[in-house]
Length: 224
Ligand SMILES: [Zn+2]
Image 1 (cartoon, helix red, strand yellow):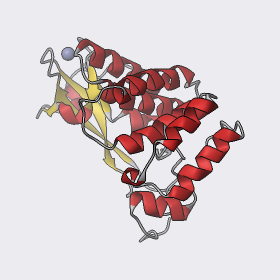
Image 2 (cartoon, rainbow, N blue to C red; image 1 turned 90 degrees about the horizontal axis):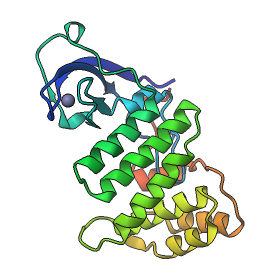
Image 3 (cartoon, protein in one colour; image 1 turned 90 degrees about the vertical axis):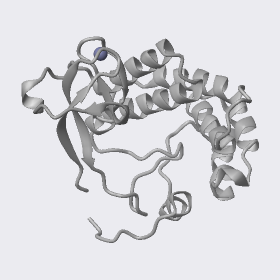
Image 4 (spheres, rainbow, N blue to C red; image 1 turned 180 degrees about the vertical axis):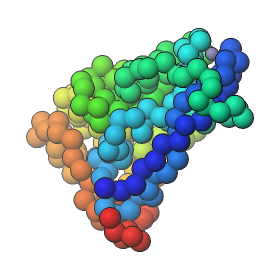
């Protein structure tokens, strides 16, 4: 197995200034042709704690957001309160709630909901609530013309969310909106559209040559 590593650290809640301990992913092997990537463009992580460690949750006010937005504190993590014990995927539900409270954009909430879905899969629990949350948030984001970003790629992701939800007609319409600005091989988009047309809602692992094009990577330097 590839080497993943968590680090215990102390951070400060930006909302209530509580100092607490949490974990971060200290080592994540780079994506190469052998990395397991699914057709909705996410990397399968071997442990749900890895994905949930991308978030920090304050034990005092329960504010939950990407760990990268919390400031690190010099106190040793062993002498400060821990982050509350929470099932990995549930942390993403708390983050979506914090995002709503702070009025963050629906696109950011969609990305959190999608991560909650992937985390639930990695945890082996039902992720359907996250999938429908991601669908609603991403639909709202795509209907908002005010943001600039790779809309074409998000149309593909929306196609995948709909296909995985069994909403095949909507999925096909989304795949048809994907153009070359998405940076995705036409072979991939055509294949997933075909899956939708045949009513196939399975998750699919991308073949290495597609991973290479989408993530611009090559053969592993140190094969595991
Ligand atoms: Zn707090």
